[in-house]
Length: 536
Image (cartoon, rainbow, N blue to C red; front, side, top):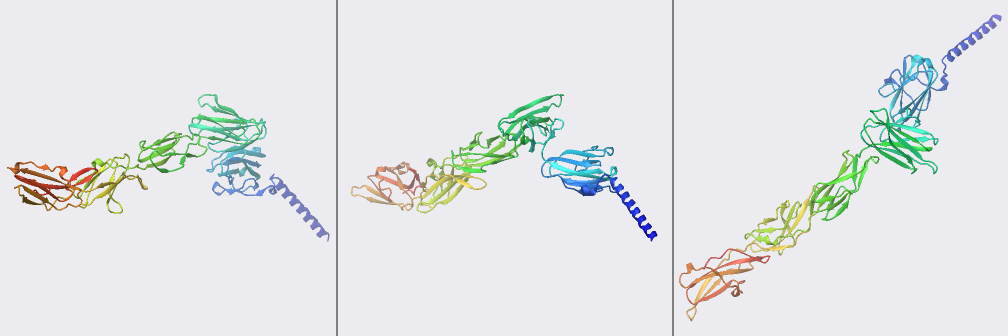
């Protein structure tokens, strides 16, 4: 019994001793695993362990010299704070480059904190020097607020991005640092709301690269209590500081240097009547482009003009392109196509005439800038016109129509047109004009001779009527001796009242006579003649 009791006491003492020893070993690590979520880093960047923001982690020493962790920042720019105990670490970029080498070392174990500005939606790495400690804790905090107070702590910002911050006191100061990424106009912009008793002020200064001095770019007070901005020209590489103070509350700041990347007009094109007007209204992008002014040019000022405000005026028929270009030199532009329809066409009646018994010439007045002219024709008694000619270009102002039928009359009109890739635009048609081809040669001419009681002779001539003829002209020559040497004379028209018929008589006392006749048509008040008949 005593031996058993002795054994139990001995076992209890041994158990107590082991517990004490284990407790001592745990205390020697300086970290209790219950303080955070247990995690083990990967042995390399390629095998890094993924961790989250705002979570306390606890790590026990592994079998590698380094422990790698990776994390991805939120979709907004911000500040990353790494809080760690009992370790040495570096923050590394995506390619593994150290961003904070020497931040902490093994001889200064304790609480360490590192604040770095991080890009949005970007993967970074933390490399822990595992051989310096057996266990450690760390946590990542991320926030988008900006709290730089001095020039040395000035927060670096990029162009064309909005940064938000907060001043907790009226005499608080936030400082921003910007290095120009291109030469040109830059706009420093502040957007803040204040109450009636407070206002923001800012001071912009630039370091001169070749001298150990500064130059003041601008200093102003935001009396408007809303949005204020200041424009200044910077050379590429020039560094500026933006000092904001004077009020408390939320604000946003930005430095814009964007050029216009695109221009959209309120229309892509229009078909105009002559003297019609249209106002172009451009919309540029991005909305934060510094210089949003545009200028206009016309490819053909004889067709359409445009003024500095975008007012387009149609001058004459034809096509033109209006180009709207950004004045900032970035090359952004938009185009507006102009088609000006022709006006009313007009015929040149002095040149319209029959050419032969089956052809006729049509003429019209030139309309500069048109793509061409359509010639329409119909028989006088027909119901509708048909297109018989398409004359390309504006220079040609006449044409010959053919395959006309003898003895028929026709009517014509002309329309000018302007053609582009999408359609054909016609002007107002001209007045119509009636036209007939030349009449045919008078046929079936006959002569009869009658001797009267007084020994005089009466010559009677007849012929077949010529289809379509408006009338006839009769020529005679007569002589008492030698008829062949006599000249032809047109019969006096006062005796030709019956010449629209096909018979005429002539009486002579002595000698002989010869006769010939031709038909005519009348076009625009002028007579055009067919061939003479045979002579009898």
